[in-house]
Image 1 (cartoon, rainbow, N blue to C red):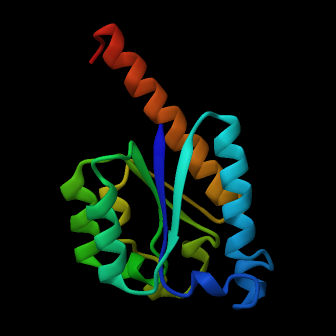
Image 2 (spheres, rainbow, N blue to C red):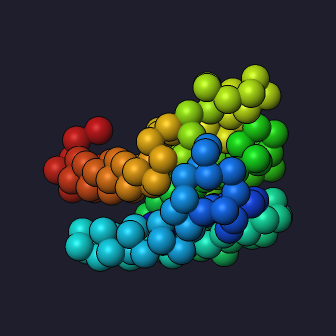
Amino acid sequence: MKILVLNGPNLNLLGIREPEIYGKVSLEEIEKDLTGFAENQGVEIIFYQKNGEGELIDLIHRYYREIDGILINPGAYTHYSIALRDALLAVGKPAVEVHLSNLYKREEFRQHSVTAGACIGYIAGFGVDSYRLGLIALIDYLKRRDNDGASGKA
């Protein structure tokens, strides 16, 4: 099983960017934790952070044939990137959207996600644990889907 983990704009600044909201853990630390957890589950992850909307879309296009699912923190693109939403829908891979903070406790403009509707699930507000929870949910979903398909269940 292979999962693409995508991180949107400014997430490369985790650990220093507004630590009262996003915490003090760096994206590199999140990647290390997820990679170790995934390896213990027999799952390979491909991890990227890009500030450009087109770069994130290009990664989805590049990897969709070789991955089983997508874990994505679209960052600010959450709120307005129809193009990112369309890319997620176009490739037909199950995706889980994650956020460190609870968007519904933030500014009003942050309380809407255009990308979440292209995902099978959404996890937010648990800090760095949102990533691990999202990965667990995606792995479980993929295993259930594969088992149901193998047994002929719909």
